[in-house]
Length: 148
Image (cartoon, rainbow, N blue to C red; front, side, top):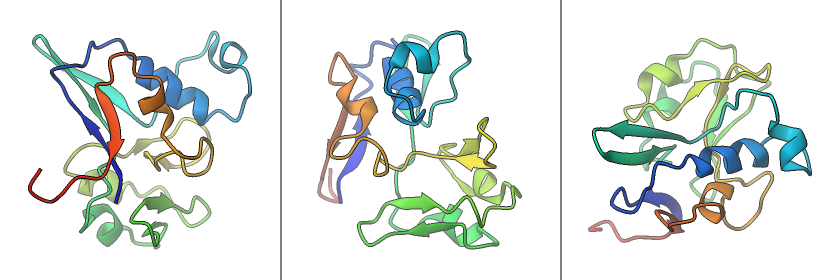
């Protein structure tokens, strides 16, 4: 399965992945109209430790603890291995947030209980918006072997 991978050696900490993610999930056609004068709440975020920057997003685990911990079945793994959210089933218990070992699930600011990366399957098609918008190619969308 193709997943988003980050090479922290190449990450500039520019946060463009966050802006591209927020725009891709905004439902708008114009980035300026979608993001101007708002606090963005992307499904990927940049963490900075010392002089190292890296992006944190859902890893679409082979054995996802978030899905196992979801009490309503709102989180599921689709046939392609992408972990998706059914917002109609989510009751906002946040068990998935507590279960994720990577901190990749977060509360939503859009009226839904939670949000996480779904690889832009519902909006961008093909390559995720964070990957497309990374100026340094620090974020890639590729399939890797288990040993990588």
